[in-house]
Length: 299
Ligand SMILES: NC(=O)c1ccc[n+]([C@@H]2O[C@H](COP(=O)([O-])OP(=O)(O)OC[C@H]3O[C@@H](n4cnc5c(N)ncnc54)[C@H](OP(=O)(O)O)[C@@H]3O)[C@@H](O)[C@H]2O)c1
Image (cartoon, rainbow, N blue to C red):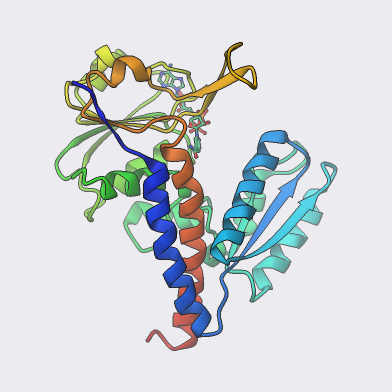
């Protein structure tokens, strides 16, 4: 068996086309969605991520408001900026790129963001609403995984899903999303982590495996149930002298062995990665639509 690829690049393209129409409809009502992107310091990976987000805004016609602050920015200065953005009516979404420098308490910053502008989906209010199944912003990477599955026609209802990784940004929110009584969910969800006993056996029981560990090529094809669907969230650099940059990107799943056992698999790169950014854009547009709804009294 050779698995069919679940190509995030193509699905993200489809969502971008839909977003363009939604943005055009908002513009007719005099609203241009706005995203504030806050970067503190010069972490190279964060600079790349922020650059990609700003580029994506430009391509879609979303107003992008960049704030690139020096590494020595204090917590008080950052909180002042967040509060100013909370009050700025041009801004529908606020994204503070993580990680933040050591002198800044990340939780305090996330909690300062107005939940109505929490397009990254990290605020405790957002996550609380997610857990109880009330309409909210879905955190971008888990939302990307859910959309990939939904739009690839993978029906999760009654299926056994194993998520490997319990981080607050991927594993935990995704588990909560997939067990909701809702379309694209209704799964029986297991979360595995570094203390899980006999991970291969846990993975073997899964109809759908989501790997979000940060361990290069850790999950082997032999662990999978034949015909399983595999979504690989991991992005890991491994040295490769033959590659132009001296490294290549691999996921948490050993692709060569998994592709022979799975029925569908998302590649790295080109799988979940492109979905994360498009879900951030989706949340920003959604936030602008909610603003319009409030303005028109819910009509
Ligand atoms: N494509 C994207 O847009 C995107 C977005 C976010 C993250 N990522 C990638 O996704 C991966 C995970 O990110 P994250 O932020 O969720 O990572 P994280 O915070 O480091 O969490 C990793 C999780 O994996 C678990 N884990 C690690 N080694 C394990 C092992 N040998 N067996 C079982 N569980 C193990 C850890 O268990 P413990 O809790 O027990 O330590 C932890 O729960 C990374 O490669 C990251 O780069 C990609």
